[in-house]
Structure formats: structure tokens, C-alpha cells
Image 1 (cartoon, rainbow, N blue to C red):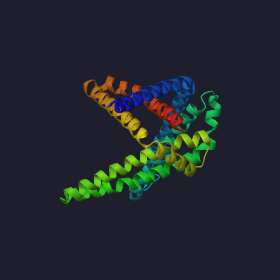
Image 2: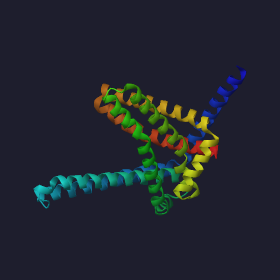
Image 3: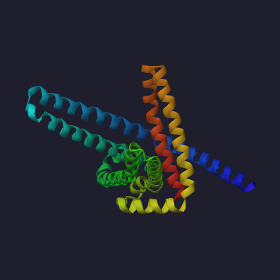
Image 4: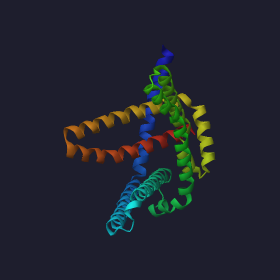
Length: 259
């Protein structure tokens, strides 16, 4: 009993320590993080504004023949998705680089995109492929449930959830390793795997706490949107950015704690 109490106390102490470190890191890197967010928002606005004007210009001028409209819209959706994906990679690189090098000037943070973008893009694609493979049993389980194979379907879904959880545990440190140590994405994945293997249950506990916290915040923002449709949506958007920055800062503090 005393041992269990000591373990619980140690977990709470480490959680408090990590939260303090996360807030300190946010304070230290606050200027670059705010500039990064502003830069990303401007990029989103400019890119999507340009893409929107280009799309409606092509449609209105009828450059594309009616017979090829479906194909054109499909290609345009792919371009839109790729642009969104690239912006996501840029956002992650800027946020993590700001946390890793809080004292660097912002122009140095921006110029680091040349160093990290391609490598981080490869890591992102690799991780998405892993998650896609992990989700295959889930889709198989849904298919089996539709054909009234409840036991097999439920087992497939549970296996998929376990595989996804393991993927998160073993890969979650790789973005921070890649940026901090400028390692090729495969080497970053290997090191993340090694860290997770040595600290498996510690990572599981911290991730569960993060997930519960995010679910609670999501439910609160959803409730706000239902009760106050306009004001609630604005508050949710305002809260979303600092929460995301705090999650990144917490994970980076956790990575530094484990390495």
C-alpha cells in the first residue's frame, strides 16, 4: 500500500514538474510562438484566398470544359489537401523549432524551414502510413459488424485501437528528436522507439492524462457552441491555439525529461 502511494505521489510530482516546465518554456518561447502563429494564419489566408480566386476564375471563365468539371474538381481537391498538409508541416516545424531554440530570432526560425521541411514531411508521411496500417483492422471490424460477426468485429476494432495507441507511444517523441538533433527521420523514429521502450508506462500515463484533458476541453467547447452559437465558436477558436501550443510545450518538456 505504501509502495502504491509512493508511486502515485511520484506520478503527481512528475506531472506538476512537467506542467511547470511546459509553462516556463511557453513563456520563454512566447514571442517566437506568437509570431509563428501569426505567420501561419497569414499563410493560410493568402494561400486559400489565392486558390479560391483561381478556382472561381477558372470556373467562371469556363477554361475547363463541362465534360471535365468532375475531374478538375477532383484534382483541385487534391491540390487543396496537399496545400493544407504542407501548411500543417510548416506549422509543426515552426512551433517545435521555437520551443527548441527559444532565444533565436524569428527570421532564423523561419529560415530553418529550409533545413527541416523535407525531412519533417517524410516523417509526417511515414507516421500517417503507420496509422493507416493500424486502422485497417478497424475498417475490417466495421465491415464484420455489418455482416453480424459481432465477436470478430469487436476484436478487430479493439486490436486497431491497441495498435494505434502503441504507434502514438513509440512515435510521439520523433518530431522533437528530428528538430532538436537534426536527425534523418528514420533515425528520429529509432530514437523515439528506444525512449518509449525504456519509459513505456510513464508515457502511457502521461498520454492518457493529456487525452482526458483534451476530451474535456473539446466537450466544453462543444457545449459553448451549442449554448452560445456565435460567441461560443469565437471562444473555442481563441482557446484552441493556446491549448495546442501548451500540448506541444508539454510534450517537449516530457521529451527533455525522458531523454
